[in-house]
Image (cartoon, helix red, strand yellow):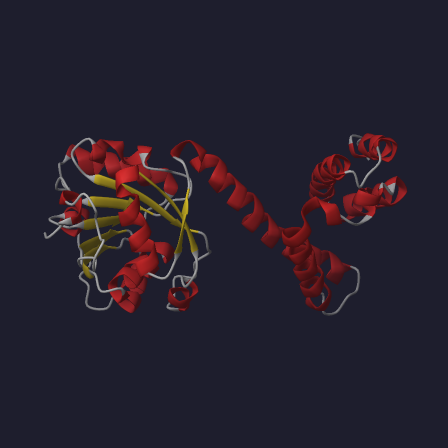
Length: 304
């Protein structure tokens, strides 16, 4: 274990030292991040894998790295990467702390968007150095992801004194560090999930609706529409809201609710919820008049 970073007041001002790394959890993210650290020159010495698919990922992305138990994977490492599901992260941390499995001075890094460094407190109290580095991308768990890490934003949270370490690790694997305060971590993750997960649902549901309407190749309509909408939103915000809700076309919205309810009541309810949010934003942006907004919101509050 050659961790000199924790002993320096100005970590990594010159060429960063290479770290001995243990990876706990070789799911889609863990296997790729482990491979990225290895590509950056760090020494990935051990990893854990439970399921058959995780073992296959480890063998593919971390060839030659032994698959071991957790206690072996974390023993005498400079950096331990905890890439386990969010719901069990605190349990894994508590288990490692209870057995004193991780040496003081070890960097403990997780890649969860939901958590900052508070979840690592049991290990921090034992002298470990906490890092929360969340890649803002979806993972396939294949080598394709390694190239996609280039310029990928990473939401980082740590102690201010460790910020240079976190930023250097991110830059080394090709990412772009973005600072996220500890208190804002849940909101940060909720925002990303609200956007990324829902846009996938919207794209797929829109395609299904168009197919049901007799459109043979719905993607030919969906791709340019969503691309233009995303570009407009990023460039101009709510000032370019368009469509029947933004225009206050209450009759059109009412008909949409009716036909969608016949198709699938759950889709109609989703349309209703998003239309309410759109109407409120259009009203605040001044693109929808108060009178038209009132009529529209009354329809959206109904039980059509």
